[in-house]
Amino acid sequence: MVVDQFEELLACIALVMVVLAVSWGVVTRYITEQPAAWASEVATLGFAWLVFFGAAACIKYQLHPAIDMLVVRLATHWQVVFRWFNHLLLIGFFLFMAVFGGQFAWSSWGNPSPILRLPLTVLYGPVALSFALMAVRYLQVAWGGPWAIEGERDTYVG
Image (cartoon, rainbow, N blue to C red; front, side, top):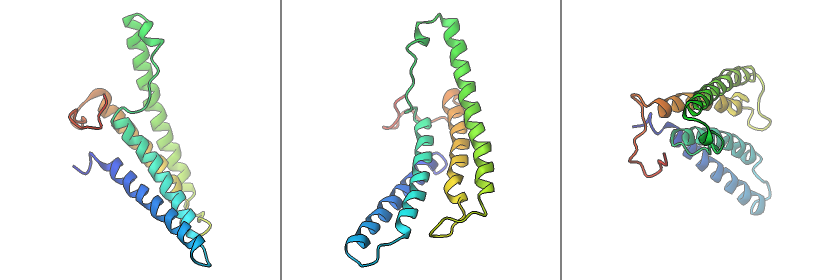
């Protein structure tokens, strides 16, 4: 289902965009007399999308590292308290970044990029979108529900 693979789809498109832009930049730099000035900017834009949507996919597959060396030594009651605190802290951070990242992206609409003259919202927008998606995916993985990730996938490590 496309909704379930949304992060991977955007990250893969961005990766292809980065590879093609960098490759074209190298070809034009060493083969032609005029290097493609836009290649670096396209690679930068694609890399921003790749990083943030790849991070959202890592949330979904529980691939971010967790250091629980201290928590596992606590009594069971305190482990539950710290885990709930961690859940609330992460959801709060994701929502904070989604809201303020969205405001920052929206305010940069009038600022064009140096070469392609695209609004810088194209560069800052993935922050807001991916952090909102991270909040959804985190809730989805933490508490299950109708969008729970299937455990049979090869990439699932949970």
